[in-house]
Length: 203
Image: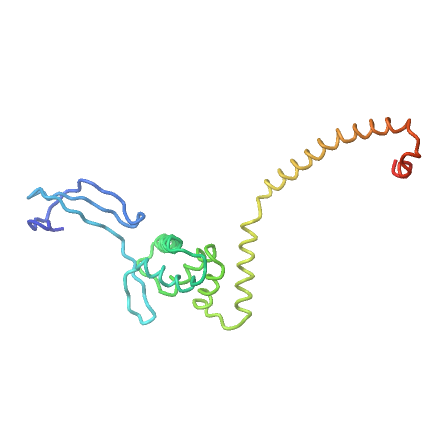
């Protein structure tokens, strides 16, 4: 690229750093002619195809703005929205696409949003998945519950280990209890049943 000072066409990179959460590279360059330094920022561009057919650059802030409406009245802060928008962008970039349909962007939001807030997820999903009746909402709620139950279930190894630990503890606690019972029985054997009329019934 041209040097912004002398318009020379050659420069060398003296420093490179990632920025914008890894979505861009900031390079410090030095002109080989005038030796003055300047900064360039390199990014990969993703184009979003709107319903009208018009394309525009992907904008993370629009993700947050769209989700913000669904989160009205919910315990979701601006930091949460920023993290969600970043996650959505990372998911889209991971596909390696140069262009993506606006509807696909909306669908990509659903999974991270379901983890953030269930009510906001249902609001957003009802628009992007075109819910038409109560059954659509019930199906979405059922899937949401299944996902949460699956996340809450511990691994089988952990369950088996927990059961074994509990059983060992019960066995350990049971042994001294048996010994104490025997001593108590022996001590009571010399006493009259008149002191405890229920003793003969339970022993």
